[in-house]
Length: 291
Image 1 (tube, rainbow, N blue to C red):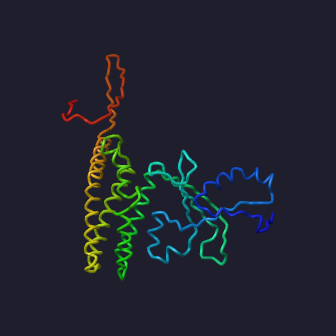
Image 2: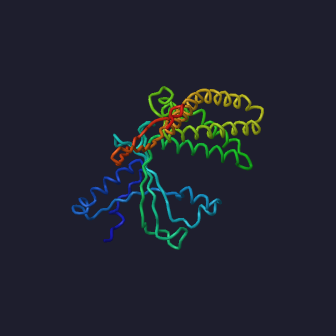
Image 3: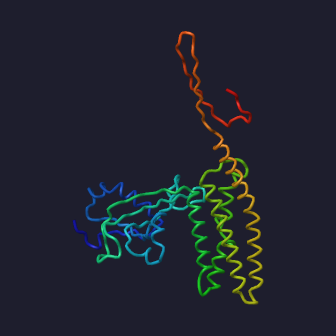
């Protein structure tokens, strides 16, 4: 079926992307009672690589040539229809598309042959955002020739955030309950701790690099950034230390829960024997038991 251009409705607002799923659900209803209009959601995609594929694509050219998989992300919240919410409520849905032929190609539109969806939990969304900030710091540090304005803008966005969802707020929300013993750490908490460790290291490198680039009139500005970084690390350190200690304790307890099977057999006077299997769960005692 062909449609005239004035009968096609394009949803341009990316914040209303979740509405596309409602439209898909109601597609047959709309098709039966209104065959004259269709709805199209326009969004952008970026190349998608898994960890193993990135190892085989080390250069910029490799990561922009022979592309068959693309990804777009859609933020959402579970309990409301809002796309964006607070840090503990923020989820993200990643849709990975596989096309029939690799880009670049002689055609600008290629059919999609596979679709995969991944849902990130709030702490996974926070980890991904922190990794992006760390990458921005790394690129700003390694830029040649160095651009002080770009470097200072990235540093300012990391330690002088005016909003309530900066890196320190992420640590307070997801790591503070562990420090108070309200939650047990899991693999995502440990990943977040390691990301903060790398983020802090890159931030210190950025401040050191910026110190070599500034003029005399920016020394007070540099001192202010260093003071904010010191306060940031002082507030962050107890959270990271508590998470590390809790992770070590949890790992030790898990490794000590050994399950041993002790099979014993007894012979009776009638020549028959019986065997029993005993399950021992927990750590082994310090003293050795004699047979």
